Length: 402
Image (tube, rainbow, N blue to C red):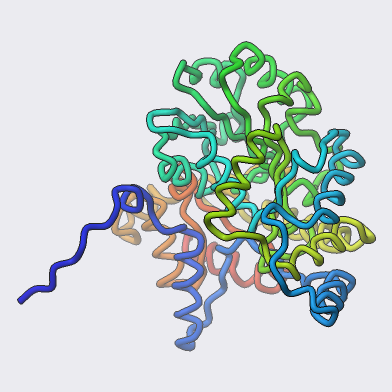
């Protein structure tokens, strides 16, 4: 007799497993089986957490700082976040306008659950970070995806934004520097988007600045509030310590915004995770307050790898790759290469998923298909790995495409 399964919620059936984590897990299994896999899927710096940050965490453990903390974060960490925003971003916040979450992803999750209702629309420029669309769906809202391909530098235009806004629009999400493209909006580009948003006071703005310090050009970083401060009463600034300080596993993200929205996010957090890990909060405070020189060697390495990767991709048949302004990803346009490989019988279908499977199964390289980011025909690699690994991986990809 066949076992009858209880029906899962519509909420969980509407979303999919994170493609980056799924591909990383599959590559990890192959590696454990003895295959010579090079994983370029995970968005994680390959550097260790700086020593002074680890030391602060060790001291916290030894001091017995292992109990519950306030749900929204310890006051000293929130104060460090307020100071960071003031000193680095010229943004003024009070402690009740700041929350600390269990990683940047959970902070975005809490925001969406706090402000979105059924049938609300969320504008998401594509290519987008894989979780934006699914988090909107979990919140019972409708993601409105706007295609911003390589032809326009992966950037949303003011005209596209204006056309997408309706009376149902509740939230607009912008991510600069971008995961997966590394695109960085200029001051003038952000200003033009801000001018559109000023005309629509019912729209909230979430600016995801997680890659702020992974700056590949040296140009000054701006977010939309720097260009259009009038939006502050409906803008939530999202950030964290994962990328800048190589602290992905410590799981600390944070947000600043209107006090009533931050309080709503805290209420949600009180009923889900409770406080972020006490030790991680101390480590995050040390990261924000300590010597920022620890970021430079990592970013210098990313710059060198970025130049190498983009140069190599642009010499491969059927591939086009733009230079990035930030983050540690390359997002090549492989549509021509996919068509050629399918025509020659190398791919089972003319899709980026088929290309990713081909690269993993036949050439032992793990990449993430662009469709995971709302951009069919592209793929993402992370160059947060050694130059040696990149050289071998790109040799294999070149062989696969030839």
